[in-house]
Length: 196
Image (cartoon, rainbow, N blue to C red):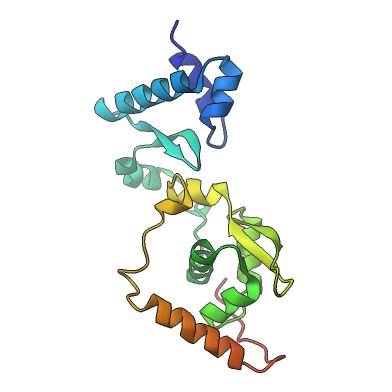
């Protein structure tokens, strides 16, 4: 008996991506069998040009719409139901994604502005979470969440694009930013980013 219908039903009901281990445990079958069935299903949806795709994201599997149908879906959605991140939030999220775990102070140093409000927004949207304290400074550090990976359609952080082609002098930039942060007098407030 095929496990594919059960897998599809479980993934259709799931609100987040589901790991192969969880699916295998729920069905009482080996993980290899689940992986093979999921890969076959993913190929089926792709080959037959269906409106949905079965994708591997955030360390698990989930259903998603075909990216080519984005214009149709965008026009179908009511404009006020779409909630976009501001430029400030996107910039802050990028810094956290590439430097995580990273403190709020380090993010502010990289961006050159106070990021308190933007970090609160990202926390409320579930795109980042608190990781723990920095061992040197004791400041709270932040990391991206599985929701971040899902929203970007990534399986893991290793799928993030390499910054080197975009910032050929990234090492020098990091050193310069570190020097600027060290030179900043203690107690001097950073400029507030008001672009939430």
